[in-house]
Length: 165
Image 1 (cartoon, rainbow, N blue to C red):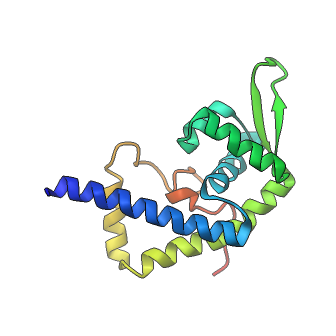
Image 2: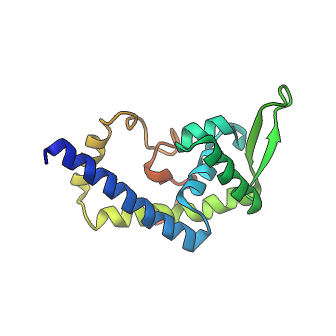
C-alpha cells in the first residue's frame, strides 16, 4: 500500500475510533453525543445563540434530515427551541436555551481534557504541533482552532469558557 492510501486509511480509522471514544465519554458524563455537543457549541458561539437549520447542516456536516432528528432530540432534552424568522415564516432557527448553555459549559472542560489525554498518551508536544500543521494542509482543515475565533476545532474540542487546570 502506498503512503497516501495508508495515511488515508489510518486517518479514517483513527477518526472513527476517537469519535466513538469521545462520544461514549460525552454520553456517559453529560448525556450528549459528539454531534449534539457540536450543535450546542455552534449555537453557543453563534450571534444571538441561534442558527438556521441550513447553517447547522453545513457546520455539522450532517444531512438536513440528520440535523432535524438531532434538533428534535435536543428539544426533547430542553436544550434548544425552534423559533421562526419574523421577516420570513419559512425560515426556522434553532435557539440555544439556558439549559443548553449550562450543558455545553458543563461538558466542555471534561471533553477537552479527554481529547488532550488521548493525544498526550501518544504524542509529544512537538509531534502534536507537526500533526496539527500536516492535517491543516488538508482541504477544509485550515483556519483557526482558537475558540474565540472559530468553532473549527477537533470534534468541537474548544471549550466555550476557560477551564481551570
